[in-house]
Length: 139
Ligand SMILES: NC(=O)c1ccc[n+]([C@@H]2O[C@H](COP(=O)([O-])OP(=O)(O)OC[C@H]3O[C@@H](n4cnc5c(N)ncnc54)[C@H](OP(=O)(O)O)[C@@H]3O)[C@@H](O)[C@H]2O)c1
Image (tube, rainbow, N blue to C red; front, side, top):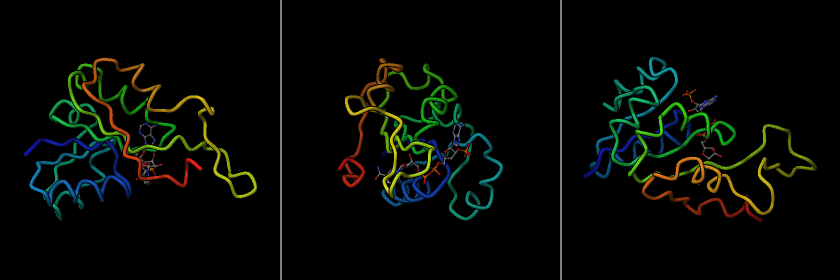
């Protein structure tokens, strides 16, 4: 069993946190404002903390924030707290701009990825994994 720190507090985070907990892992959620998660914590027993605290405590870090804020979330987590750890990246580089003709816009180009950016910024992460679960966004 591992200590899993999930950075993010929306739908994806809640799903992953419950999943890790179901499989017996210790889970901590990270948010800029952990107090807003008090109800969730009391219901599930999952502790809420800041990004820094969650990353520092965790053995495995899951990044589940809005894509355009991924770099900021990792900056708040702290490079020292990520070094040598597995980081699972769930984020999509979806632009904050509205869709064009119904097509979501990415803020990355055709020859780069958000994960590449994050890996370059945090070279001491042990492994960065991008689950390939959003194939539609890649089409
Ligand atoms: N791989 C997949 O299968 C899959 C499936 C669905 C979604 N996704 C991706 O998963 C990610 C999470 O999706 P979601 O819908 O759960 O959440 P979301 O609404 O995209 O993002 C909400 C999270 O972003 C954080 N955030 C917002 N502004 C921030 C800032 N300036 N600095 C740091 N953090 C900030 C919030 O943290 P606070 O708690 O501090 O407000 C909150 O936890 C997205 O990137 C989405 O595209 C992936």
